[in-house]
Length: 216
Image (cartoon, rainbow, N blue to C red; front, side, top):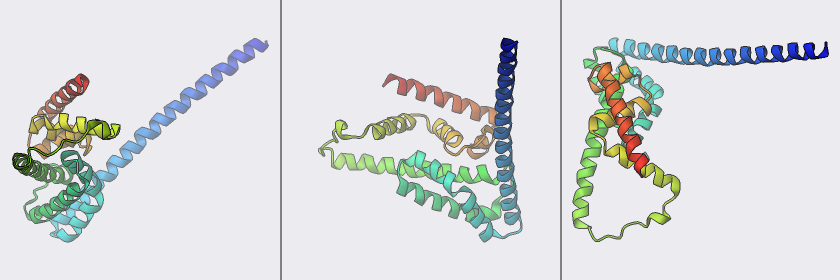
C-alpha cells in the first residue's frame, strides 16, 4: 500500500513538473508575442507621425525605440564605441531628412536599419582606405605583443576579423540578423532583397564564420 502511494506521489510530482514547464514555455511565448506586438505598435505610431508630417516627434520616437539596437549594429560593423555613437546620430539625422520620401513599404524599423547599414558600409570602407595609407607611411611601427592582449579581446578581434573577411553583402545580412535582431523579412527590406535571398546570405555567412573560427 505504501509503495502504491509512493508511486502515485511520484506520478503527481512528474505531472506537476510537466505542467510547470508547459506554463513556463507558454509565458515565454506570450512575452515574446507581447514584445513583438509592442514593437509593431511603436512602428505604426512612428509611421503615422511621418505620414502626418510631424517629423520631429517621429525622430524623437525613433531615437527612443531604436537607438540601442542601432548602436549594437554600428558597433558590430566598426568595433568602436565612439564611432558607433556617431553613426547612430548620422543614421537618425539621415532618417529625418528622408522622412518626406518615406513610403511605408514594409516597416520603419528595417528602413531605419537599412540607412544604418549603408552609412556603416561607407564608413568602414573609408576607414580601411585611411588605415591602408597610414600603414604605407608608418610601416616600421612596432607591432603589439599578442601575449599582452586579454583573452576576451583577442577572441573578439578574431571574430571581428572573420566577419570583415566575409563578402560585404553577407556581412551586412548576418549583422542585421543577429546584432540588430531583424527577421529575415526585415533583413531583406533593409538590404533591398527578398526574404529567401536574405536567408541564403545569412546561412552562407554563418557557414564561413564557423569554418574560419574553427580553423584557428
